[in-house]
Image: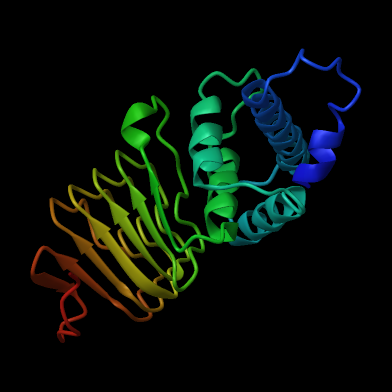
Length: 230
């Protein structure tokens, strides 16, 4: 993809585009393509008029985002840039959709370790860490919204601030560590894995099918100990 993008600038007069400027133009083009895909995903979500808290709608939106990013080459810096660019984006921001977009980016990047500096953002993103796969570690440096780590698929998620409601809801396996507090319904519907909240917890969710939830070193659910999350 990179070579095709560079070909776009071959017609420019020699000497008018420095190597640095050329690189910036390439990155700008990539970012614009992301926003085009994002706008299309927003249109689909709004057209469906379906609540994104429903699992079927979430899965559909997630797979739509995966398809939108097919063929794009990006790295950790691009993800951080996209996250920051959402702050000044002129497009309408449907919070769960933009957060799913970020989750698709994180899950598809080749690197197995990624940090996002959320403390620099004004927006509180929901669904960060959604479907985080096994072998990946995501560190979120700042506050997160509802459904942090929802449907986690074996990855390791660390929140350096507080998480909202439904943290770890429906997670299949993996680990979630929240350094500060979590809201209501923590771990609802979780099937496996471990959640550790170091600060206060609003409430533990219902309908847990497996896994374990800790507040610090104290096991909250289930009654029998299954090890300690470090």
